[in-house]
Amino acid sequence: MKTDVIGVRLPVEQVAKLQKMANSRGMKVSDLVREMVKVGIEGAEASSDLTVQLLASMKQLEENLEGGQTWLADVVITQMKAVAAARYLAQIAADNTDEVISYLANQKPLDAATKEQWRKKREEEQARQGQQWIDKALEIASRDPAQP
Image (cartoon, rainbow, N blue to C red; front, side, top):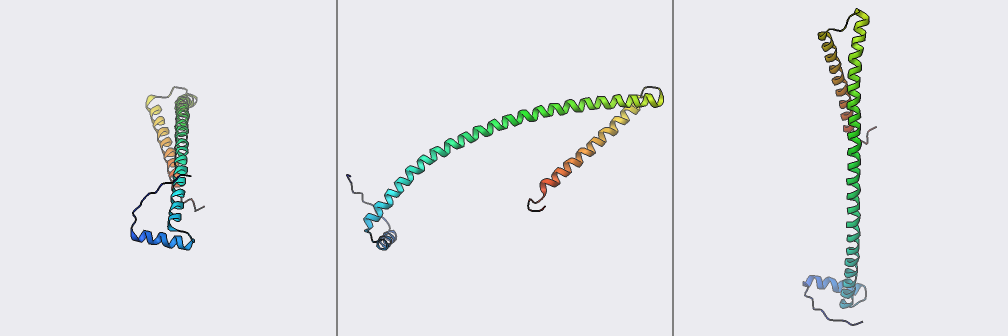
């Protein structure tokens, strides 16, 4: 193998450390430095290959995450539409039930003021129950995972 000479200036402390290391391994300082440079170059080449692989893996992960976010957004939107429709239908059912109950009890349709009063009461109860669920969820989220 063809070789070349490179002159390198190092601080005296580093030269002393290299001499100590070479002595402990029974080597010349030049042989130790040659070995260290070889290992460093091989490590840099391997690191470069690993960096390329790591960047490719990270790109794939990013694409997977973006795809997952899109899918999840579609699911959430679909569910929100279903919830809105269910809530609308439940409101219509409740209003019709109020009318039926009033007619069975009084033999006449429900007057507008009572209808609005019952609707307001239902909305207040829905808000109260919703807040209870939110409070419960926040309580669960704030628990220490180490605690049962």
